[in-house]
Amino acid sequence: MPATLFILNGPNLNRLGTREPDTYGRTTLADIEAQCRATGARHGFDIVFRQSNSEGTLVDWIQEAGDVARGLILNPAAYTHTSVALHDAIRTAGIATVEVHLSNVFAREAFRHHSYVSPVALGVICGFGAKGYDLAIEALAHKIGA
Ligand code: CA2
Image (cartoon, rainbow, N blue to C red; front, side, top):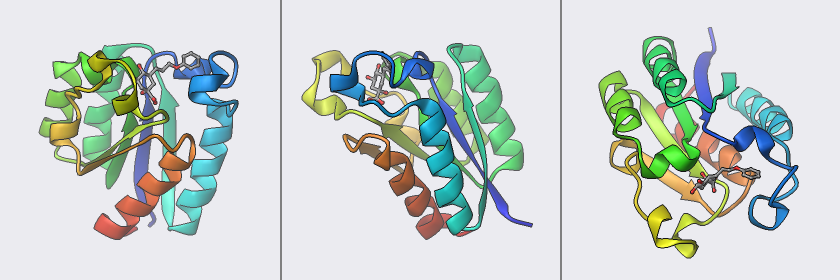
């Protein structure tokens, strides 16, 4: 049975491709989902791809990933910089996690330079737009296999 990767996306990412194209590009979240499914299939992964604007829902899904998935790719969006709850959920789930950001958060405002997620992630990919999700799938394939 193929291993499952959860790919979870935080608040406002449902708006991708419709606003702020200079920062986030013109790719929609549906485009990213299709790209992840294709890349995941090449690496032998089943992909569960979701987005929520709610911190609690993301916590629920991280817990679910800990129960059923081999790895987690998470773009926590603004909760990156605020959420002890996401930090605790990933730590408790004990799941191999890659943090992804479309933009280079370190080239932006100072409040984006700190992440509550990074200390409980295997690694962080930022600044490469939608390609970062492919890189995260490859990183998990390398680290944990399919
Ligand atoms: O670069 C990223 O992927 C971020 O996680 C995106 C978050 C931001 O708070 C993080 O600092 C970095 C914001 C997501 C907002 O998404 C939008 C999409 C389209 C239009 C407006 C916002």
